Image (cartoon, rainbow, N blue to C red; front, side):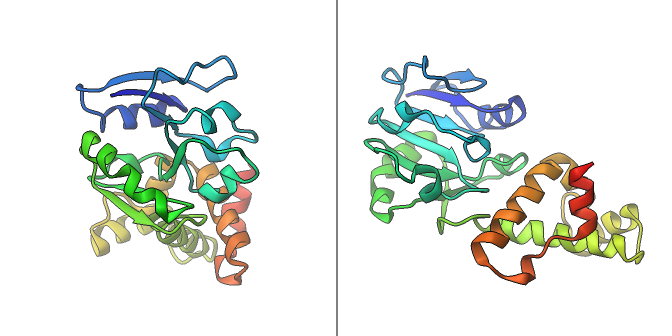
Length: 216
């Protein structure tokens, strides 16, 4: 299978590690109007929800298309677009592609059956989640990170103590502040902002310290 993947190098590196050598992978920093999609079986944009505009040719290529859909849902990314491709969302934020499963969403549940053979070819174990901002894992983890910032802001504990406490108490691979550095504060803040807007619920209110750290 021929796969075209665009996105920042950190994400492309993680994606590369979950693609078998049996497949032909072409890496591109960013898709442009000059990109030729017809020769590929799968088109992947690992930074789709960071882009202000999507290349229309992706949606009219008639191919399988995977878009990072954490800050924006698949429905948002494809809104008012002419679609002839089969589009799915992927949690492609840094560190999340390293897991033994892939978090996948669909704006149209009827599309799920079309992807079954492709996931088998990729040897992926997809976890199908609702098409909404934050998906599932980022929504839960980023709220924990947000609470860690509240704890730091209140002077309850230092970053180091919070990280150590989370690793010892929950067996997390990293503490919240260590993990924030790996994922990127920008990704965490913008995802929480989208979740708050989508849910319209004060419980997703972003800690002022997190917001200020993002703005620095």
